[in-house]
Length: 490
Image (spheres, helix red, strand yellow):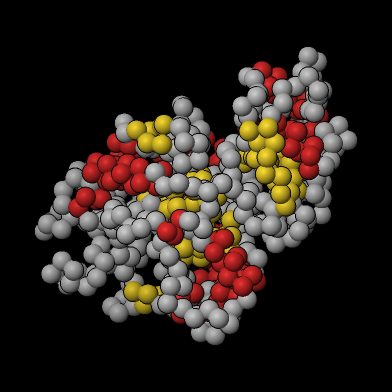
């Protein structure tokens, strides 16, 4: 696929505009110049050359002279065989904490940092943008701000509790160098697991990749899990679907294979919004170390983006004959949270409780990859202003954190994965949505279980007692054929 970036010439050539590194440009405080990467929040990738300079310090200077930039990542040539050749400077719109000492593919050479813009003035981004537009037109390139460049590669992960009981799978997953994140519906992990035989470096990488989830509206007994956590925190699990967390919890022998946090206070988007506000208030009240929590991910959705006419999502789902699913829950939640004040996790500034979120989280199970892609596209259509950063909304990405095929046949599942993740018409196509791609999808984590109960999905009704499989790992910790396919596509 074609790689479109903000050309170096665009930052140096227009008359009247300051060149990158020009001594007349406003200065900024330069901090956190370290080996390693800082993922997320990209808005531009600049191919460096003799004009811009080709060193990490030059990349830092580029960030300093663009008012929007808060974090930069310098990627020397030759570190990514799947990307266009050349040395690139990635610019990011928020201060982002360091994630490890290597590039995100495990190779050494990436350098990154954050900058303090207290000394910058407003002319910088305007003149640089004007220069970019003029030079890009002459060079037949496209400025990122104008139409959107291809997004960074899709980040793959695992949603599973498998590591608690299968420590061999930990080493296998880390050694793929493809598991960028993982989660287990909890705020902690390996609490009762004997890890004495595991390589400390592997355990450190497992910790770095872990994303905790605040599963329901109840507050954790303490927030010690955040002390060593830098990065992302996910919100409630599937409040748009009523599913008691255990058999007979409600006295009705009710059981949902995808048990959710969708009890009445969260099933109702209105009361869920106040619970969300209280959750964010707790998180922002915790003293953070340098970097701290950078991003908050929305409650995870089981259902579609568009509301179903006539369905009352304010009705208690535990009451007989009331709805058990709430299509369009997130859009209703958005309307309520836009009216509530919250503090942005990364900047500390007051905003609304919707724009305090950085990503929209959904789940999808289906017989076909096309149905999953259609569900994702449906969310884009409803939340386009959020994914594109329009109309005053903070720009968000989409996370698909539970996905699996409704099947128990490994060959079918591998084909499903290929159709879902390929780079032509799948999530691996990193072009903007306007060009037919899925660049707004930042992360996907496969739901990995040895087997799980079936349920109706789409037009498919499973047979009685039908079970499905999805495990990426075998009983000894190695990769299954499904796992080999998944990580091979990432």
